[in-house]
Length: 173
Image 1 (cartoon, rainbow, N blue to C red):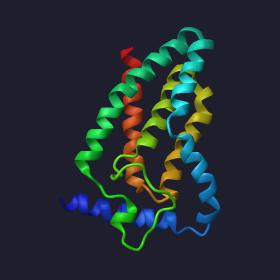
Image 2: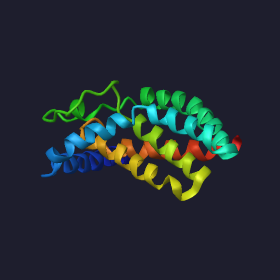
Image 3: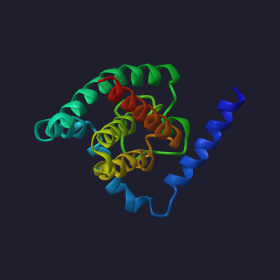
């Protein structure tokens, strides 16, 4: 339990450093847009579009994406409701987030998991053509911290979950 407490304290310090940046106000508008782009639409549009135009690799991507999301959503829900980690505004009394989160708990970041999963699946299917998506996925994770709805550890856990399930589903399909 001491290790978990130490990790939580470190995560809180990292979070406060991120949101107290002198550039945070300038980043907030961009962070809102990037965060919205991780709401799930691209995770449907990109694999569907590539399935229509990229032959077998695109079809494999679409099937792997469907499988990955079918597994990710229940795991995400179980983790979120098992750990029940409070979001920064509830965990840090003097802090207010820039947006209101869609659910109560923060660990892991679902936006980051989904974005990382998509970027990883596109990378596995099309190699370095996925670089813009990989950058986007990292920006989605960072935006969730900048907006004050996740701790950095939530982002790391979400990215790990997304990448792991992407590799697994890609190998199974």
